[in-house]
Amino acid sequence: MAVLLALCSAATYGIGDFFGGLAAKRAAAAAILLWSHLVGIVLLLGMTVVVSGELTARDLAIGAVGGLAGAAGVGLLYQALSIGPMSAVAPVTALLAAAVPVVTGFAQGERPAAAAIVGMVAGVSAIVFVSAEGGGSLRPSDLRGVTFALGAGLGFGLFFVALSYTGDDSGLWPLVGARASSVTTVGVLALLGRFAAHVPRGQPRALTAGAGALDAAANVLYLLAIREGLLSVVSVLASLYPASTVVLAWIVLRERFAPLQRLGLALAIPAAILMSI
Image (cartoon, rainbow, N blue to C red; front, side):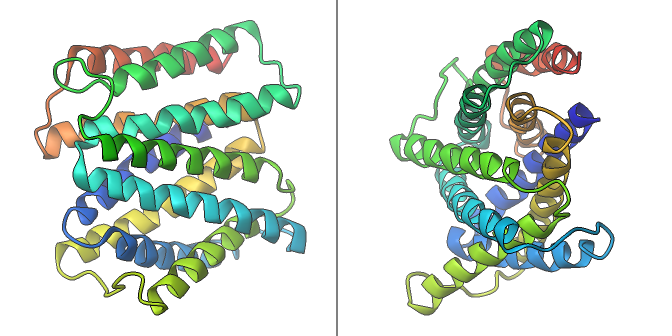
């Protein structure tokens, strides 16, 4: 069940990032982050009625800290996607997003089965290969895009780790805490005049709402997955999210696949199977 939940979270994260990246090309990335997270917190509060859990200050605090890291990650990702090709920027973040929880999991004493470890290696390799641009480059051509993407990956990795420390009986409250902290922080920055927080108009508005809803759903799926499986395995599976971003970029934006990207997409399937053993 953990593998299925993690893979579903990866697909949902990737589609949400695609929507957010498109919106960020037409509106301010910080405004996209604020309004998408507002949509997310409304949905999460609604889902707490369905998914019951114990509300504790500890879990809210852990979620809030993770939420700040995750919000920074999303903001940096949208910045990166606004200046570089989706098929190159998003996978760079995933590599670091997977590495941070894997290192943390092993440091905590997790020892996956041999097949799962082979699958993790294959999964990380798939992430690297999927990040290949046309011409075989493994990174975006724009240096700023690389910097933003690496920062985003670190933020996502810390967010993944933070959620692993929340209680199994806390329901979705850690995610509510995460969204509350991110909305509050970004909202204060907007009030201080750090950026314009106007509601996006036209197509960016719909894309922003979609990104917020999908990101919230992906977080729920990841939280449920991490409660069923190992941090090191679940995080690698969830970090395969660039696959759906790359496929959508190919279908919608006509961004072409490099040979290594095709290899990465193909490698992701046996990697997921091995990690499920």
